[in-house]
Structures are given as structure tokens and as C-alpha cells.
Length: 183
Image (cartoon, rainbow, N blue to C red):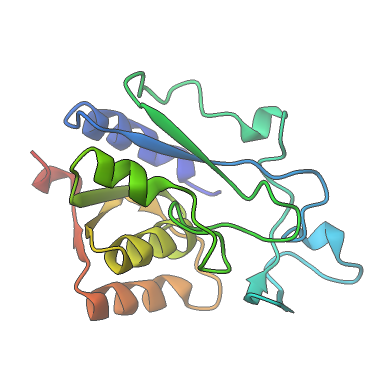
């Protein structure tokens, strides 16, 4: 993702302020249905209809067992206690850290957070307008206070998706803050 690497320094600095850190990792099998290459005549960023709703088609990315699926070497979160792997089911994509894109198959994150007595979730990462957005929406839906750290995110902006994300988060009352506001 263009400029995606720019957030690593911000994320590393932020992570030091949190006792509880959870990472998500796209972990797609080769030929995942969200890949444009899996659909003849389709291109990245086309949208198709799936049983669970609209699906943006992506360039092949984060294929299981490849270097592209690994965390960046400069990401410094050794105290992260949980990694949620997303998108490993061939027939359904997964943006949210809480649910698959069918919005009903849970990842287990809500239970993990509740067992630890956590009520607030700070979100950072890629991409603001997809994975971060869906995670913030689902955190809110699950009763957590969701806070997006905007300068620790980058968006893709497929047909105005960044602006739509900002509108939706505002409608839900999800706060968007800068990293400097996190102490």
C-alpha cells in the first residue's frame, strides 16, 4: 500500500503506551476469492456481489506462508499477546478484527477483550477505509468505545471510501484522534 510503511514508527511509539496489544494479520490462501486474479476479466478494485454483500477485488496480497504475509521486520510490538489472522477462509474476506465480512462469523476478539475487562479499543493500521473502519464499527457494535488514531492509519480510497469512512465513524460517535493525543 502506498505510504503504508510510514505508520510503522507511529505504531511502534504508540504500542509502548499500551499494556494490551493485539495485532491482525491478513492470511489469505492462494487464489482467495477477494483477489481479482481469481475472477477472469476482473481487475483490482472492481466490486462484485458475494452472498455476504459487495466485495472489492484486491491485488493478490498477504498470501499464507509468503514474505508478503509476514509482519514488517521494523514493527516493534514484542508484548503483543494475540494475533488475529483474517481472510484465511477461501470463500469469504475479512476486514474486521471482530467478524468475517458476513458480519456474523466472530474472530473471538470481543471475548478476549471482555475476559480482560477491557472496554476501550484504540485502532491503527491498514487500511483506514476497510480493515480499520470495519473493526471500529464492530467494536462499537460490540459495546466497546472505539477510537481511531488517524495518523497511525493509511487509506486506500476506492471511489471515495476514505470520506465515507469518516462520515460513518462520525455517525457512530467513533472518535478519530492524532497519536499526539494518546498519552
